[in-house]
Length: 166
Ligand SMILES: C[S@@+](CC[C@H](N)C(=O)[O-])C[C@H]1O[C@@H](n2cnc3c(N)ncnc32)[C@H](O)[C@@H]1O
Image 1 (cartoon, rainbow, N blue to C red):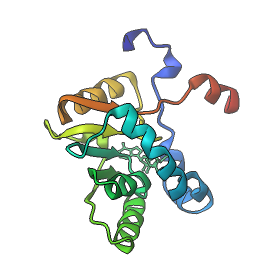
Image 2 (image 1 turned 180 degrees about the vertical axis):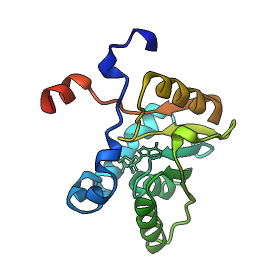
Image 3 (image 1 turned 135 degrees about the vertical axis):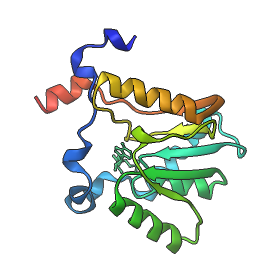
Image 4 (image 1 turned 90 degrees about the vertical axis):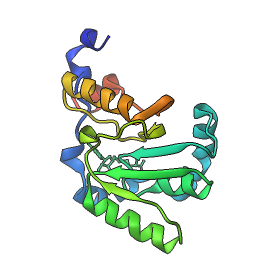
């Protein structure tokens, strides 16, 4: 199926252009507010059929907005992000909220988890640089998931991106 995708669908990675200095300063508003996150958790719980037995990887967790909210609701979750700055902020907020969450500094395109998670969750963070990159990422996700594990991601709509950023 991936072979048939038009060329413009094979790269969603604009992250290196905006992370993370801009995001932590002028682009700050791009992180959802705790209120917004809280309101949307029921949607994920329902659509992913989550239970407290799940072990979730929050891939591209940023400052941990979703990681913390899932954790607060009793889910077992860890976050991974390649930005040291975001993770440092994630850890500070997590500590100040008296939560205990593991955050891993790393690139999910390099992850080598095996049979570990029942859910892998990408919220606004599913990026890859090429068709091969996408295939490699999907196979790493497949390996990292337990049997019957679930993957959630949002994919940018290339038509809208092209229209807004021709
Ligand atoms: C739009 S932010 C979303 C952050 C978080 N999921 C949220 O919704 O608040 C995208 C995040 O993905 C991270 N990211 C991008 N590519 C990544 C990669 N290959 N491995 C790990 N994190 C990545 C960025 O550092 C950034 O924190």
